[in-house]
Image (cartoon, rainbow, N blue to C red; front, side):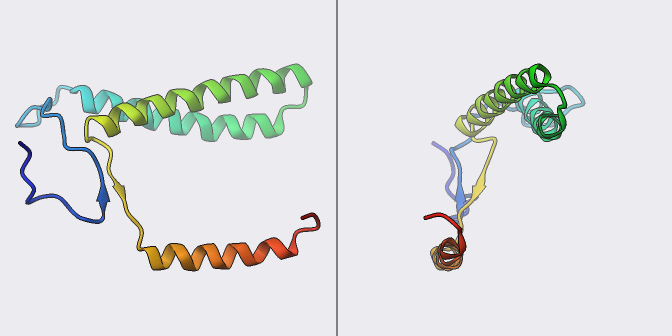
Length: 115
């Protein structure tokens, strides 16, 4: 059973699966490979978003959109794997801050030219 002493109540995470070595070596482990893949996917989607916006030819645009979609799907799959193994943690936001942001941005909708 996982020790509860290191858990932060504001974090959203699964317990780590215990597949990591106790002492970090220069060798890459599964978490390192997944983290590297996710970082690469994030970089690629950022770059592909620019390519999609700036594609001057219709067929090129369509190809970039397809590649971007596939890359986003790969990012999601890597994220899901990392989250399932407890290697990706999210910080929970305070409900008061969420309510404040919702109120702020919902008021902006009255400025839209369409309803």
